[in-house]
Structures are given as structure tokens and as C-alpha cells.
Amino acid sequence: MASQVTQDQAHMLLRLYELRREPRLRQAREWFLREFYPKSLADRIALTPEQDTHVRMVTSYWDMAANFVRRGLVDEEMFLENTAELWLVWDRLRPIANETREDSRDPQIWENLERLAIRYENWRERRAPGSLAALRERIEKARAAAKR
Image (cartoon, rainbow, N blue to C red; front, top):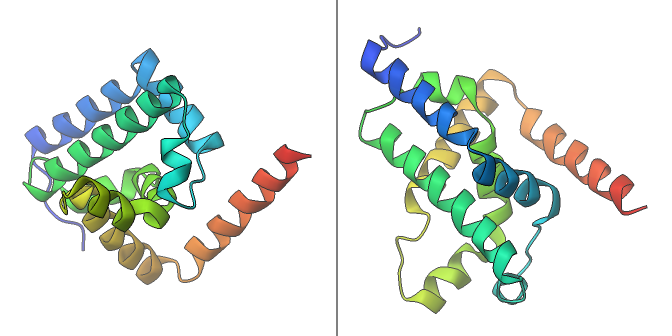
């Protein structure tokens, strides 16, 4: 059963979508999703200053959005129904998250993002079992095709 969404929560979700359309953030998101496949913290450290800015913009945006959900400013189910990008971002960060947290001595880096991405995984698997594995496969095929 769908949860009851308040008008304020719906407006906040729309505001988050407006922010995603900001040109610099849009450019950062496009680069991040097309090019950023880190395997270790060394991959992050090797980025150019502009690429590092892209990573920081994308991760801070999605961690903030996840924080809004955690605090109830955006209805969680409505949020999950309307975006998979948060999960895609977390899936890219997953390989470097622990190393980044250790290196920075900040165990809370990307915590909101991680928690909501895990809830998204569980929610999506209940609704469409196997769909995340299929999505990962499509991404890898597209990435391999782009390299050729």
C-alpha cells in the first residue's frame, strides 16, 4: 500500500529534481555516470581537479537528498519510485567507501546515501526480483561498447 504523501513532501521532491537540472550538476552527473568506475581510493586520488569536483558535487547532492528522506522531508516510497540514480551513484562508490572513510577518518561519509541505497535495493528486489542484476549487466555492456 502506498504511503500518504504530504504536499510539502511532494514539493520537496520536485525541488530536488529542479536542483538536478542545474547545468553544472547536470554536467557532473553525466560525467560521473558515464566515466567514474573506481576500484580503489587511488582511482579517486588520480582524478583531475575538475573530475574531483564532479564527484564531490554528485555525492554531496545525493547524500543530501537521502538525508531529506531520512528526516521525513521527502516520503521514502515516493522517492524510491521516482529515482534509481541514487542507487547507481552508490553502486559506483561502494568499492571505495570503506577506504575513503578510513582515509578521511570520517565513518559517516556517504552514510545517508548508503543507507537509502540499501533500502532501495531491498525495495526493488521485492518489487522486481533480479532487476538490479539485469541493470548492472546492461551498464557493463554499455560500458564495454563505449570503450570499443
